[in-house]
Image (tube, rainbow, N blue to C red):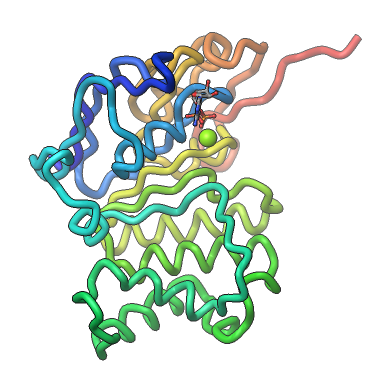
Length: 261
Ligand code: ADP
Ligand code: MG
């Protein structure tokens, strides 16, 4: 199995945020992770990226236990687009994307032709070339997200982790960002694990949905059709909903059934 998450429990100060989570992610999957606030979505991504250490269980990438993989070796295979990027320095867009090459450089080595090629390709794929010499602090939220994805792609990963890449973006940028990620998944077989807040967006784009509950356990795992049901969504989010097939795509879509009286 490409990515194996086995009996994973992760706790903060003894309180588990993720509870005995087991799942296999095949190569080329597009997995969207859904769940209410505090259900452990970010904790799961950060543990897969080796930022957090599990209190029990393990993560395997291509059958290698991540405990035995160095952070640098992992970064050659996996890149992460974090939810909150606190880049407040005056880096240019190009500087940021170049940072994606760090795991590939020998110590003190300068960038080679191969590195520039990866940087340029990543900038083209995300359409940030026109912003190359702009300061990261002087571009819009949607542009910034695209730059962070460009940095992640310059790393040339086999697996891409994204934490709410569409939060704070207007609807056209939400779909633009997801279309970009979808294209990378479809054309390069890049395996994608993406935390999303918008259930309907996840339903439209995901091959597989992981639904976590408030206790950090798996409530459901499977295709959008299998997971996004009225029963599952109401149980996990604790609010009444209607689930109907999208009139154009047939994918399950969630609407609130809450009545304001
Ligand atoms: P999600 O991304 O689904 O909103 P998180 O993984 O961020 O959830 O958090 C899961 C749980 O762990 C929450 O109850 C949260 O309060 C707690 N938690 C997250 N980060 C920390 C931390 N650094 N220290 C203590 N508790 C944390
Ligand atoms: Mg989160």
